[in-house]
Length: 322
Length: 187
View (cartoon, chains in turn blue, cyan):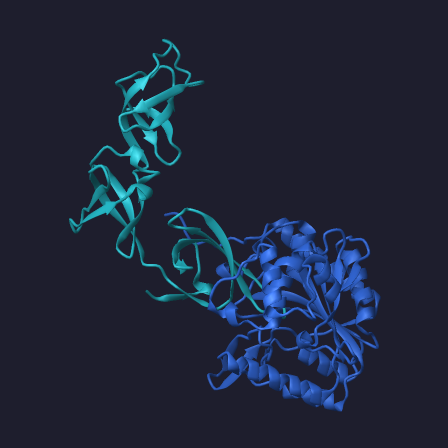
């Protein structure tokens, strides 16, 4: 009888060797800079509050709700507050409802934190890591606003939802379905970023996008002023989003306020609302050193290094075979 | 009809977009790490055959299209319409010129076709993959040529014109692949 169950790995064995080599190169990079490798829990009593990121929920002894982490950010910040200094972690993270050519519901993340760095310093270091691991040339930098003006032809800080819709259509991106009729400005910006601007970025050299709209600050500091900007950056290479970093918010009450807003946004659209992480807020209250942090997708990094087109080619057993 | 969430869109699902029935070909998730997830969907308009791409907010719901494929026997053409019979229910259906544009020239009668119904009305008629038809007109061939290279046009009893090898002549029956419109063999 032929065995119909696809038990074999989807990645070639030589790809798995490349993966191991890449992880070794990353560890060498951080060892040379005295950045400490750490390990924090994958399962927590708290979940992520972000509107667009969904935690897997499980139960301990069928009594206590637990959540798989979507990034190791919160416990790593607790280590920073405890005085750990510069730290990094390579771990599996889990995100519900993310599966596709560039997504697997569990994936490998590299995340690191540098006390005393701001987002500019951390972009420099990430650039060096890329040059080391991917062999790229020095990255270019573009503000979020300039990237939109250059590649989409609209201003993300002044355009209305209607103008952003016209802008998408002028690039051949046509929306359908009832939800887009009532979409907020940030949804249109996400649409343009993921369909038009992002795919055009990092074609010659890696591209950092920085200075995001405050509405997309996530856990970044917002620089006040006439034109407030979130001190957040993303890295694109060959049109693919590879990393997201922040000059980290350290203010506990501001962090609590953002969690509350995130939760109310989730509630408003009928999503589950996991409890937010009081451990993190207690640590921020104690004092998080000024720092910058960044998370980078290892699977995508390997996809770009090896030039493959599907995430299953760099993972031994993607979700459908897990 | 039930509604389907964009996460359930997969190849072959039939949905209604702008009042027309579509067949989903491909569904790609596009999501900024911190941002809204979208589904970029490639789909074919079942009326016109045109392929379009549309982007949905992930999780949005879209009405399904009541589209079914039914095996039916082609009965006759009354000059205006083509008549088919559902071999299970014996119910008869009529398809007009527009619907038959791609398939009429393969049918002479009694073939089993797949009739795609939308809300109970024929939308597309797919002839059998292979049909056997008689050549009514073709130039006399060159004897001894069996290579199949080159070829010549031949008109079939249904009016269809296909390229056949030089050695095939008028009055012979041939097997044709209706998907490509190509000669397969002498029958």
